[in-house]
Length: 126
Image 1 (cartoon, rainbow, N blue to C red):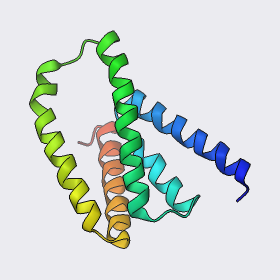
Image 2 (cartoon, rainbow, N blue to C red):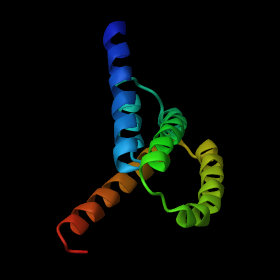
Image 3 (cartoon, rainbow, N blue to C red):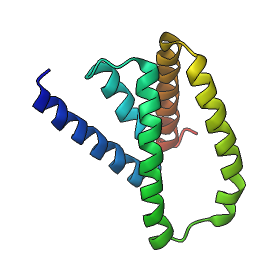
Image 4 (cartoon, rainbow, N blue to C red):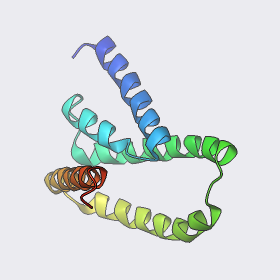
């Protein structure tokens, strides 16, 4: 892959990821992980770790806009933040120990189940 194409693709990926994170409140990893694995040949573990770091920064940036312009639910935030921090730390520990094939299939299953559930909810079935 030509270097200029790779550079443009990276810029488009991170802009898309940021837009998805800012618009939908998360989900940028759905774009970043597959693109890093399939377009750039990164191993699953490195792609997921990179996506986590990118999404963390994008989420922080989006949070400023949400808290400034939209009435945020501070009670819910305080309720879930502890669990989210603990879960993130546990996830990072498991990521370090897991093999790439297992991570890849776990990612596929999570994306598939999430997509099906969202579709069923959107159709009013759930």
